Image (tube, rainbow, N blue to C red; front, top):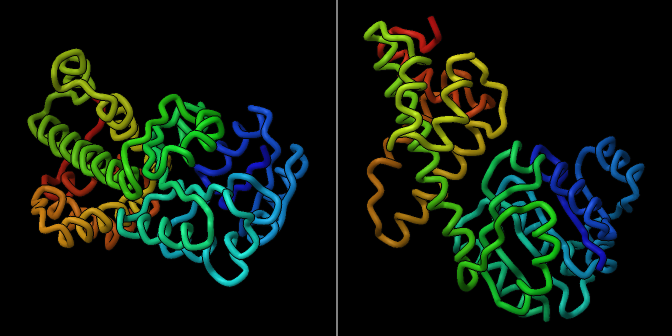
Length: 294
């Protein structure tokens, strides 16, 4: 099976390395020609969107927005312009369910198959090949693409029809991002009382307050390590998609609406390209304290 992959950024780069390691033939496309040539040196081919459509059985897209995904796949000289009937297009990007459903319909009209298959786990899980991949679409397309998705995932689940994968990702983002924010608020509170945040963390992490988010982000907050695994910018986009979708389906999301304003503040204060662990700086600025170990 030949796999095409568009987007070799912080997530796509390690995902493609796992695809190669799994033994698939791979053709890549990205804006950074230097990165493309690095993959050519590893044994991949490169080509235009149309080249990938013509040559590949499965074409995966990992780009920043739904608009870019749609253009890559269905724009003039896009992947779909040359893809043979039965080709599976897989959007790994975080987009809205409505955008995924639009792409599904466009693919159907051209005799192609489409899956929305966003991932969770950030750069560390992409590097480890242990991402959680949530998929929306038809069983036939899922069966074809699953072995490729397995190459970089520890969990691959068909959630439901088209758009279901994107819905699952937005649910994930509501939980994860609010969790990171509340960890920042809670440990700002601890620091303001004068108690060592690291000791508090050690005391509570084995109880009900313990979580993957707590273990991943509190040490970064304390170390003042805001080098991004997942940027505030990316999560700002995802939370925007949550609010857009929530408004369309008339589902109030008050906590997440407040979180959006926190992300807006971080953007204004220069943290847009920092890791999500920098959420703590919002609460620190309110309390005039810094979360750090004694």
